[in-house]
Picture: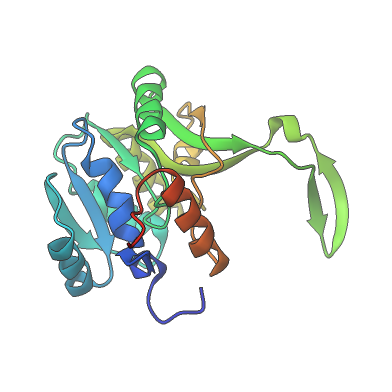
Length: 216
């Protein structure tokens, strides 16, 4: 983002990105606990004080890598056979419908990932040259939330740690241990804020969702 402030604390129409993200989960009766991995507890606590949640919320330390943070969050899950979803703080436009679709898929298949089918032709590139063209019919772009039973995620994270393996997303660790992962088609609006232009895009989406109130 090129900012000193981490992107989850940047504001869209005056409200922090993280507050938008948390509010969707907080509104779901199926959500019984919110667990946030953070490297800045004081800032996160101030945000939660400014935008209080009705769901029990627990803060844990963030780790040097994503899956270290995930491991810390999993220790705060109350039931090992409960269902857990892992979601990017910087995806504030997630909808309750997408979340519940992933929940249903986890209940049916054991694990699930929200994703989009690739709209573009995908090239495998090596040393600046195209090596081959991939069949885009088999290519899906992973989003979050991604979920499974707590015990399955804990086992997958433990195996990855023993192997010294670091994945680029969460269900990749489940794939490594042979756990089936269902794909749930998401929405293009579930954008991840990565570059400055994404803030304007996210604001437009949030306004279309009725989650931003224009000043009079």
